[in-house]
Image (cartoon, rainbow, N blue to C red; front, side, top):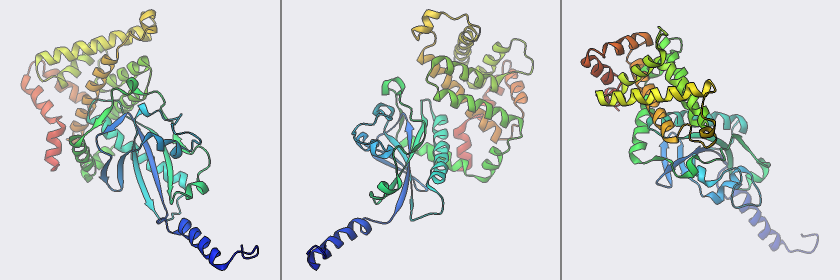
Length: 357
């Protein structure tokens, strides 16, 4: 500018503007945002500690996060899938590459969402993860096009009308579960992957969690059936479905009426599963999406969720063998006191209280 006749004063003004834009917008940081599918919170932000925050992000800000240009509404992220993100920030430069750091943060998001999946009934999943930088101009240098990992889930659950709601009581429960999982004895026990009961829990959990990610009713039904069988299949394979349904009802039902309701519900699940896998289902009902209803799937998912949690608590209390648990459940047919004892031992709230949470 001096060469073209500009004054030193004008150069100084322009330099101060450059300096302000470049250096005076705060320290450098990067933030990982992970979209939590179908989650709803009733506040703008929830501080979970350890630099974890749940944030509601306005739908107009989502396109820039994803790297979509020229739009105020994201194509990859319909707002009906929920606008709550788990955010984790890191201040200053790091030797860990952006992609590696984002992948590691995504694992933290999975760990958090897994707890939410077992805390209560509801559809919730980890969707995709993106990076964002501060000051904002850094994004123009370090983000090129669409930049995310994972699979944005574009189809909302139940048209966005049945969100997984996390309120203040839910946050308290979440924090208690997180603290319990941080206890050394609990961590050691959960890492005992070679123990038979632990393997049972892992198999059942894999298919239960998988059922929450499926969008097709038949796939959810099959996944839930496998989860149920993983927990309650007897060593004697005779009358298999009857005994699986019986064991589940004996573990979960607090009285005869509830046990009968659970038993009949799971028997209906097995009837539909059998028709599906053997190709004898009503094709017209299948086409009309009435072969299995959303209410049925949610009921079975909730019962299996409760079963997995009960197995985990019993495992943490020292039960190593699924067969021994099944044998105890069989005795409850003739001994109501034994049924009460098992359900008391499997109660998550009692276990948390014993840990001091």
